[in-house]
Image 1 (tube, rainbow, N blue to C red):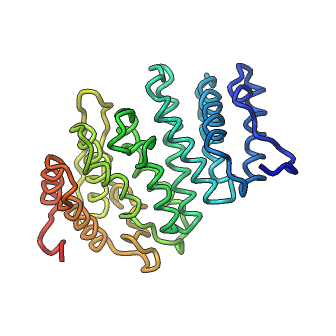
Image 2 (image 1 turned 135 degrees about the vertical axis):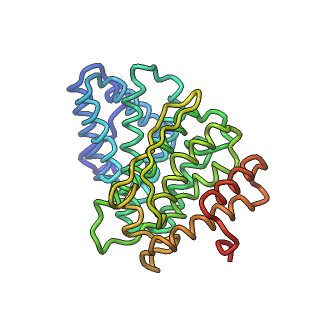
Length: 318
């Protein structure tokens, strides 16, 4: 760490203090430290201690407005860091802590942690947008999500399915918000690159409910939003062990309008693509993922079924 810095890394016991004023000062100190020391990487062990303190700092917040403000303030720390690499390391600390501590969150506190996850999903997208959707940075973040300790690691039995469900529920919604707030001349969003960790999970998960959640919360709404055909049906999906989610009713622009305003498939340098090209590209990707020999057989059948349901044809694989 830079010894000449005017700020220091707050101790976990200060962040998790029972006194709100002490916690507030600790968060301000943390924000100053991160902005001034972005080029100095926090060692993994220290990052683990830091995030444990932040986790319980949020645990102590006990009023809805306070919780909402703190969730936003913590997520903004991702953008406070000026180094993209350091921001990714900070996000890695967040996800590893959330996965590790999730099973200990009681029912009364669960909703506020759902909010915290949503805010960090949004902050990650804003970070990638700030970097003009740099392919290397996107892949670094995808690795955070799919590596052991990440929320989309299918081989890690410690990943709580409830966290996977919520991640799927908010993923496209938060991406849509970031795209809607972007300027008209902003860099196109590489949809397939951002979907890679979700596809990777869908090919290997042994949970039928988790697979269905990804299908109904991500893949189907995405294909619906970039479809050239309208559909105003409203559906509600619920399975045992998961919270119900309601499919968004189409408006004049369709669901998730930001996803097709300025998006591409993989290379932002090729410019934004129209709905038809995006739709064909996503269907082709589903076909490729289903065809991969490493995909689990049961998941392969469901991916092929989805491909056919969404109008997949031989031309998608040309």
